[in-house]
Image (tube, rainbow, N blue to C red; front, side, top):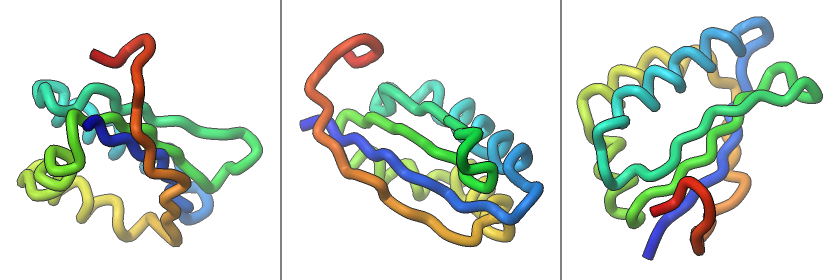
Length: 101
């Protein structure tokens, strides 16, 4: 069963651009992982200190395994000093649509 996440990072004031770049680097680092079907980074003008990520994985185990990749660990270390809060907005079960295999 596919596994989806919609999450929000609350970032120190003025650091949103830096966080977006870190998350886009994360997207590049998992580009070759077939288990990751969607990884989108979003911002909202209504929340200037937040960055949103929407992910779809082939299953929850694949997502968990990605957190143990050396490249992921390095990016997490870079991001942690910028983060003031995190929220898992929703855990989803993707059913299909454009962009999903």
